[in-house]
Image (cartoon, rainbow, N blue to C red; front, side):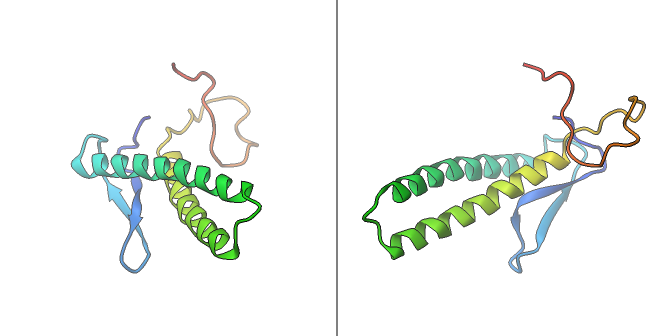
Length: 118
């Protein structure tokens, strides 16, 4: 992943007031960037675990309202975290070359490179 030299990185946490936090950095090797990478990895891993738990709750026909509400609350939290990670990572993708043919009529949005490195 290539970082834009003057781009702001959306961090995987918010202020105490719930506002987004951003990092202005010229390199991905900074301590705060590494901490953010670790938090993002933990959030993604937690999302996977919560999804598994939610599936188990949904598969149990005897589960009550309290358990369903708890599972839904955890899924909502995990989904919010994972969407923030996706937004942050998507914003850090390198922009395509403006000289590519046929780009004038395309809408702005995420783009996938022609070749994915292995």
